[in-house]
Length: 508
Image 1 (cartoon, rainbow, N blue to C red):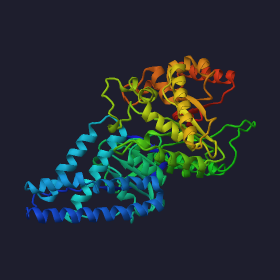
Image 2 (cartoon, rainbow, N blue to C red):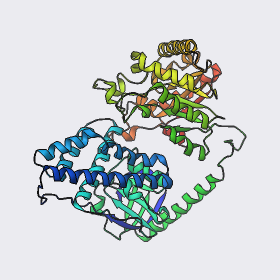
Image 3 (tube, rainbow, N blue to C red):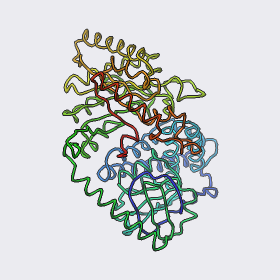
Image 4 (spheres, helix red, strand yellow):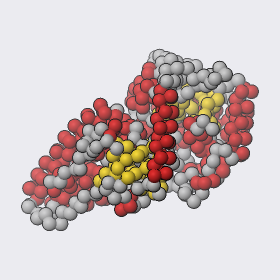
């Protein structure tokens, strides 16, 4: 049995199709002169850009806009005059087009890989994929066509790239196994969009799994059996049937009120990172948005989004969920979320550092822009709620409210419509907030318990550290007692309390 990271639940049984990494050796290419090499590079860049655009269009219709954005990001990189300019400089120095592509992309990969933020590191994967596309085009190599994969195929690859998924007949793919990628990687996003069981970060998968090998895999547990015995096959067949039966049963509840058997209503909301995530959430039966992570609007760009840009994003989601709440968390940067243009200092303990509400209160101009956009977004449907991250006491809540009042006064003076009664809530994700929940409840309009960080901070466990990950559990009495006391404080004050994080999706 091989082990990896399960990123898309489901059971896969099938035959391995091993996608071998191509050797892109350009050492034999002869330098044809600067102008000819530049022309070769320009032709390759245009060909790749055109291919990516066609693939993005196909992917949008196949799995939705969110997955297609990965390709759009690569098109933007190719359109960046700085990147192509650096390649042309290499060529003028005597390098063949292939060497220029390899050197420049290599420097970007090294730069992005060195950053702690997972999303920024993911850009290294994008650049590597783009480099390979350019090199293949320059060398006249073609990608392996997975569109013709027969039924019952388990794809085994170093990484799952967007190009592999274009034209893929998802009903023929029983599973996906890769050597790289984590829960938030592009491979995971693509696998979930396709709804194919996937296990990523399986060390040495290409070496351990022979082409044509029989595979039994669990996309939730992250287990992969190579050439399993008859008993294991029967066990996995039974699991697959049970999983499909559960999924079929759940579909019956789409569009129906979320009510327990004894008649108690529980609001079922979705978490989103971008406006385009709202439509799929609505289709899956979400009754509102419990957490709109606005930091994603600030990432992968050179400057902060303007008030109008933010307004458009918030207003779009508010309109789509006109009948329900849209809880929007104010900018939560720092920790594992690095936004280079914000100029945040490198910190020894970033998770305990100058981040989230602390950073925003110290940068009121940036924060005011967001608060103004949120107030204006709530003007039409009055369903936008503001949630403050990493609160540790009432002082921070009061400071945020003071800025909000200032924003209201500005908008009133400018004659711009806004929601004067917008609700402001607190994310309970620090032990400090949990311990003073009774005080916060007197001044907040609602609570949302952020179980991921609350568990991490309460138990002093980094859940990303494999050596201590086994100690990370929401069922620890200290965490359960915190949750109970927070709920009790909210109920005593008569304010609603919600929950987000992995625990919120766990029936137990």
